[in-house]
Image (spheres, rainbow, N blue to C red):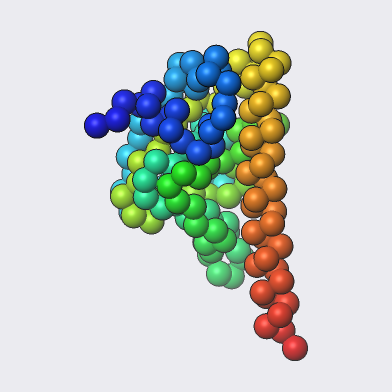
Length: 153
């Protein structure tokens, strides 16, 4: 079985990371398991963690009046989960739930933010990597909107 440190080094989100920065992640990481339907975090809740998906699938959901919770995106192995932890007010914009047995690497957000403040090179690298997540999610949303409007007369 892989050690937590090995899972962190192998994760695509951290591909090409300066080896001197891995200890910032290792120092605040935990291995977590979630069962299908188990909530990982809740929309508008405090964003206290950052996650890397090792295995399984996670549904990003939002509450839609008159419809309830709606899945807007599904994430899988090799993807990062959450960006709200990095930006004030540090509240989740979506909910997240496991859709199958899921293993995550969980990082303490306050610890990562503190390390980013203390080491500007690490902070810059972290922000760039999270910005890539935002760009991917924004592009995914754009594609969904194009599909919605393509179906309308």
